Image (cartoon, rainbow, N blue to C red; front, side, top):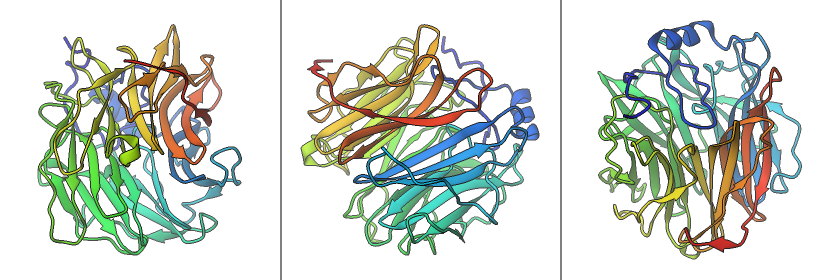
Length: 415
């Protein structure tokens, strides 16, 4: 029996879920209500993190709580050397709508195109758990200064618009995806901006019925192809939708299951996946990491797809053991990296592995975090110097903090 089979399928936009570094945890209805009602009581430190890379220029977007303060402070940091050194944190949301309880698994998001940056988060609203509309912030000077942008959603609703993800394209183009409920149905939405976030296109619905509360991943190519990885409704496998181009003449392709585990499950596991777009030198166009709770196959898997616009995914490659969860993936040149949460004895750690042949063979997984900390939700980006992994961690009563570390390719072995 699945360890999550007893949890009902519910709207969780306003719910504060602090996922463990191993298997995900779902809250009861009473716990969800308490979390949404009491804000971040008992939380402190960095509870939200997103990062994006342009060569060796990295933009980090974090949400940090002071003890007893229900409002997270959203801050931006920039590195020009692949993550070795960072600018001082600059507050992004000054004078803007507050973020509604950003946390790992529903992090405030950022994307960058040169010196132009777009950040997005969910604000408080009127749904059962306090979630509401989106807010955006824009920068044209690499994050030194910020101003408020528009709400990309065009439904006019004040209920939850969450599990946001952002990707950038050329010529001031940004792509955005999220979940919201229109009518009685939760669905996957999409909008794009061609003027660095000043205006957004009419919303599109790549899939009108999805899972409730697993994070989404979006990526885009220089020629306008867009792909979104998300957790579907039935079965609860991850699915991918692709938009061949953004010239207004092509439509979203039919959703394609990524992994085909056929996991039949009535509930939300609170675990999304990772998605990266590579090139011919990386051996595949799309690379994905997914998690399934299917009995006897529970864990993280890597897959790749040779060409966009097709539903052909290679067989899943298992990464780690059954404790693996919360995965991510990135491409750097001809290498691919995967990271995930795992259990090591009693410790909650971040593990990672690197492939130098487009995902066909993988090096042995390495432990990136210090087992003295409880670490969660690794994010990996590719830079000119290789891969860098980010995560949040805590120890005892100390506030949570973010940290990062390079991930290099050891000697490879067949998996």
